[in-house]
Image (cartoon, rainbow, N blue to C red; front, side, top):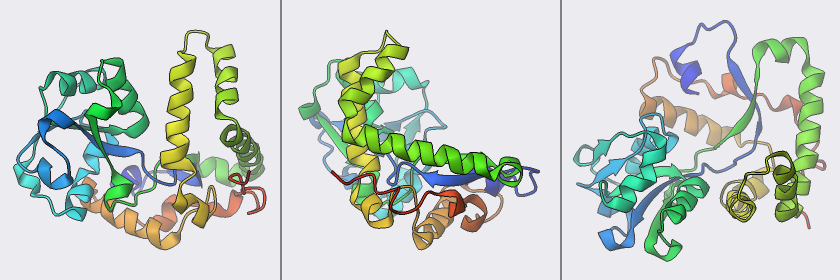
Length: 253
């Protein structure tokens, strides 16, 4: 959305063809000992995140949804590996990050789940979509069947992963022996619960979008990201390559 809003005349723009994270994984994290319990407690605080972090860039949407005093909040930028370290050390009061990434990174730094306050954007009035599969306009024009075939395969794989997350990670371990298998199993389960097999995804259908919701997101992103032009949601989404609704019924037991 940001690219399209800032590059309206680009010769080939990315187009989303399948929604994978029906709800954004973006979240605000704080430590309970800071006294931060609700979004209102963020007023006047120091937040940290890389400048390109999706949660940070979308924070104005979170702030508006929760009536925050945006000018009172100060931001500190850092490289991604330092984000959770700085929160654990108390260098910042809160951070933004993907739920299933920052939580596990905090755990790796000795912070227990029970000592963390996690405010997931979707639970606090921010119904943004998350990660999607995208295709170039050239591929859409020149090889649409390749897109359809890939989405059929991805949908089948999604059903298998959702049905057996732990078993799925074993295949990843076979290809990348150095991963922490227990950690990645937990990460995958958190991702499925928070962003993939959500109530919104089950209502809209896996892989699909609600056009009104997408249009609202386009408007919110244009405002929050200060894009050069307003974003036309129809220019960044093409659901015509999706498998049938029956094939995309990946949540059934």
